[in-house]
Image 1: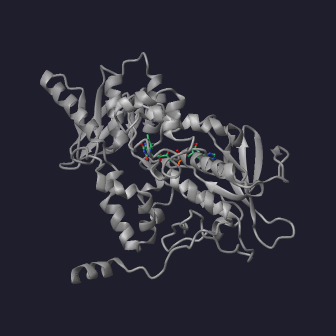
Image 2: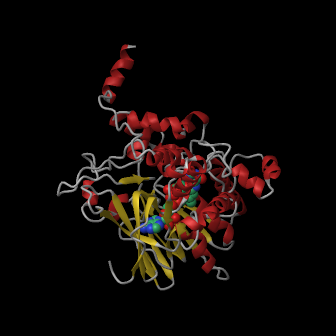
Image 3: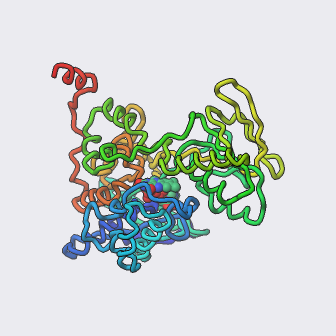
Length: 462
Ligand SMILES: Cc1cc2nc3c(=O)[nH]c(=O)nc-3n(C[C@H](O)[C@H](O)[C@H](O)COP(=O)(O)OP(=O)(O)OC[C@H]3O[C@@H](n4cnc5c(N)ncnc54)[C@H](O)[C@@H]3O)c2cc1C
């Protein structure tokens, strides 16, 4: 422990959450609701550490009229406890907009409004969250007289001060990281779309001539639309490998993939079936665009062609062969995948809307704690049904009994809703129950599930 380290070694929290986005906010609510009815001895103490200076949910993409891609009923709590004071409806009532929202007539609020709802909920936990604080390590702790690693120290840095919070359970919910193609470094003119609004604001008052957006997913289409509307004299190039944008499947049957019950199905399915489900339904979430936005962009493009003033341009079936920042411009070499022909676009700004990736959530684990976490043959984390990571003893044989939970990077075990909001309410309740009961709610993964080829065989016989 360095001199700059603070923290009370005598205080042990039941839960320390790393990150305070919607996932751990949902958990804070679930624990709060547990405490409200629990006997004093059964109450759970929780603290959260968040590196942003204040609560924020993808602030760089809070485009004014962008709507949620999930029903408002899939808020932080309704699917677990519809009578909670933390529902989106409670928020609307509090903001005196309940009746107006009903008349609004949509299940899909704007992202700006949903952000306000999340902030409203987060504000009720201010005393449990250390903002502006980045967790740098989670260290195993074997209390004096104990044979096992029963606790962890969550070590965080805030300015020049290092603090540690001691916990019986740690819940890592640090979200996804922006993905850029290899060799691309973000800068003042090369952005990831996560910074779209903040960086575009820097261009206010300037008149960019040409901008390019790489990618064909929802964020890419939104970025194209936003830049085209915000800079009325600029040409906006959309560059992607597809022939055109593909619509997100938001139909009723397909939406069942996000149901709480789908997590049970997915969890118990054989690996081959898991892969099959993810492939069949990737078009509910990955590299797809809201159909209204696709229609809007197409209409804009067509109207511009009619008027003979084309500002919105599409380089489809194309890839970026090279990108170089030269002075106050970016030279973007775009290569057709059909005939290999190259076009160099001299742009003021290039926006990479190339998605997000799940990093290894356990990179924070220090000592040999990370090695004690079980993984499958492909190196993926063994996450139990209750989101607790399966652990072995440390290399020196010391048993590990501390609870290590993850929210988010569990698509391989819990399915496609893992990184989304759809299941936050129910998942939070499941994690809270597991923690309250000492991590014993989980039966682990069932064995002996049939392989995918056996299922096919059964169907054929029928
Ligand atoms: C633009 C955009 C729109 C989206 N819209 C939807 C939607 O409509 N519906 C839907 O279901 N999903 C949507 N998603 C998916 C999104 O992943 C979820 O909405 C949600 O953000 C997941 O919450 P989370 O708390 O798990 O992760 P995050 O929201 O990413 O929160 C993680 C938090 O952890 C903090 N953190 C990270 N590392 C550390 C550290 N070392 N120390 C301390 N704090 C740390 C981060 O600052 C962050 O606040 C959208 C995603 C994007 C990018």
